[in-house]
Length: 102
Image (cartoon, rainbow, N blue to C red; front, side):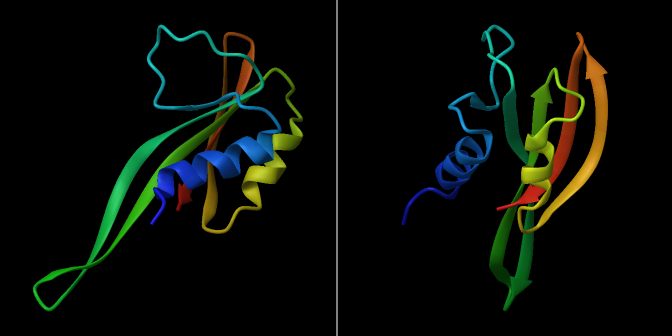
């Protein structure tokens, strides 16, 4: 069974159209924009018969783009089990944060 996070990585690369997708990057990394940064945000467990029946991971996915009308935002928003959380601007770049179950 292939790693689900790596599958998510490939989906995000395809939506972005480049390989500028970063999983929990260190601050020292030099990123190219537009970019997508994502990281594990939560793990929700469903219990049955005294144990974990199902474990679902939630990722925080941030689209970073100089374009305030970035088409990437619309592409991410259409993913199943994805919800827009907030947006903000930092260093003249627009950040759009989503919560995504994958």
